[in-house]
Image (cartoon, rainbow, N blue to C red; front, side, top):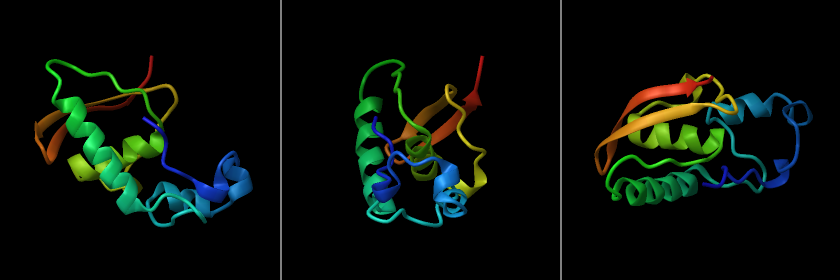
Length: 110
């Protein structure tokens, strides 16, 4: 799945963005021209529900912002409560129903 749209921040390093980068990671700011929170929540809601409709486990390869949006929407973990997502790492959720999931693991690395 594609990353949270970062608008004018696309291609910038965290150092180039400055203090607003940490505020974005915490879900407190939207980058200029970036994807609004409501849009990413809508996008991940549909994607998770489509994936959950498949029998058995589903592997999704994505980015930290998208992972934070999924955990916010389905597990109730606000982005500001999460450690940064490490690349590469493994986060596993178990769907409970169409609107809730259980976090099995977060940010596992080899």
